[in-house]
Length: 328
Image (tube, rainbow, N blue to C red; front, side, top):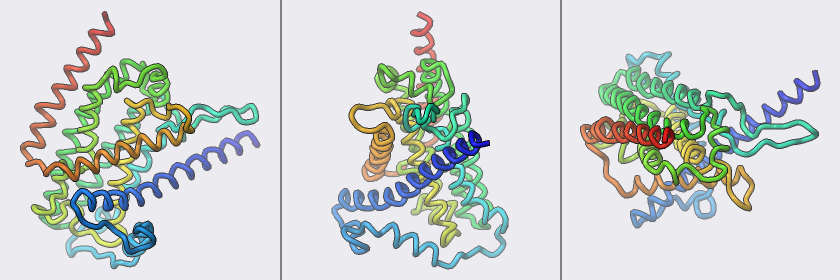
């Protein structure tokens, strides 16, 4: 009884710590992005709410909670209300299999530094990523708006296309690690991070990850100049906030996966393992922000050509090369 209760308390403590860190980081990544874009574009970022604008995320949260939650006439009420939650919840659930440190031994009991270490963790991540597509597509369809519908269709087509390249780019990593467990993949990089032996897989994965998160230059589902705001045009208040939260949590998820698959995960000198993982996640997200400030939006035909005619063939060739080297 006590053994079961202790295990339950440890699990709840890990869930609480991970969710708190992810939510706080998501809020302040918004501030960091607005500050950096201000610097890139030679203008001021937020600087009024608190010292240097550090309370801006709090002000934004209060504003979203107090704004009126509107629903368009003719919208499918149940689906319209559920779509933002699907996007946010699926993104948060992906962190359940991300390891943030080696096993700890406390009182003779080993505690894995991951919410749950399942031997098919990689498949779990891709399954949730696929479910996230439904939130975007259904949110656009249920809004009873042509702009939102076009954004939802674009989002579904884009995420399906780039998810294929994303999955294929990880096959060589799985071949080298010999496991679908994210913990085993990190342990396989004890000697050398996979970015040094799989640079092509890293490049394909990183580009596909930016497309999966619908970031510029891959933000065709939103495309303000064409669709107003795309699939979330008709959303307001905290329901819009859930779409916004889902995007920034998804950026963190992709940053964590880049770190786990190619940068050695939590491994690093001097600093505690969770801090190393956090540093790597933030660096990947900062790179995404830098790309947003640098590159223009692609045309839709360019978007699809890049995915189907460039990234997928490169990923397939990389699988063949990796297999040949391993066989030799």
